[in-house]
Image 1: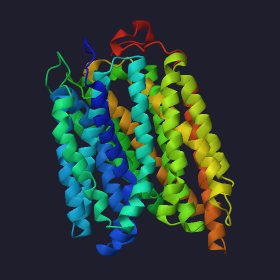
Image 2: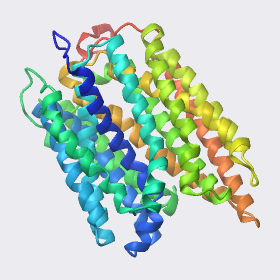
Image 3: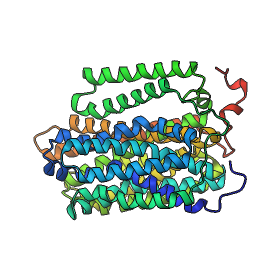
Length: 478
């Protein structure tokens, strides 16, 4: 860590959080614009889904590589490169004249996000010393992430219904220009000191291929079926690539992911908690959006405004969580947070076909929001505590990858549940039953996350030792 706190660190945090906000926002903001995009660009519904899937694939698949590149090449440098690419890709999305061009631009946008998100978080780690101040910074970061995930519904609807879907992407252009202008002044350059600038192409190829295939299989599963040969084959191939990656990393002199990193129980537990939280958050968000619009008949703008209670709750939960986690540790905060998300989802299982916002939605969102914010900050603290500065980018990539892959998996599972359960003579009643079952699935996601947090996260708030500091008794070195 730095010997003296950077006097610009809180301004720098504002910039980093803005970048994180845009990355999270762009993952979901196209949901409400898809009907207009498909109509204007003459795309089928299946092709339109790739406007979302293309971003998720490139984003989730390249996060580890993006994070490690920041460690080796310089975190500020890679952040600015990612921001510049994000600007160009967003402009290309807005100017797209065919569906193919838009999907290609979304792939580029996902690549830029895979550079920006872990790089921004690793800069946060190297800017704030571990302890109360970093926890406070992570609390703000988590709150912004929660706001970004829910603000997509607040922003996407008015932009699509107003100036047009293109402005979903044009919105990024002035923001990226501003970040490029002030980034060199606010951010201090850092990289992994004493580490040779060597690369692991075999490791990068195998893990990137595994992540891309995993996300692709998950995204396509609701349409082709979880037992279909395509899904099973892709998942098997992804697993084979993970095994190949492990073999490569064991033999590499400069591994992309040092396996000593996974000897940290907190890092493993925190990332598994984030995976479960991603499944819960994305599954709940997709299901409640579909219920409100398809059953209750709310417009995108009306429902977006209705989610403000969840957005505010996520910000409050993250703020309280970062204060409490310093005193009691991530285990207790994550457990309470996941308990709240589980209760919120359980309340939403009671939705009815002739329901209303206040009777069927409000209370569930009110309880869910604080749990989301508190769990995100607790799991982030756990995954990043004790990580050596030389591995800050890599650890940040793992952090982001766990949440994003969890989101893709959660969305796919609830979509499958809705399709399989929404059967009956009354379409709206059948849909409602499907959504009830989907919310029940998110309760299970929260319960699994709660179990992981209780078993793997630390009770106390004492700093978690870096991998190199773990006693030999904890396990033999490779």
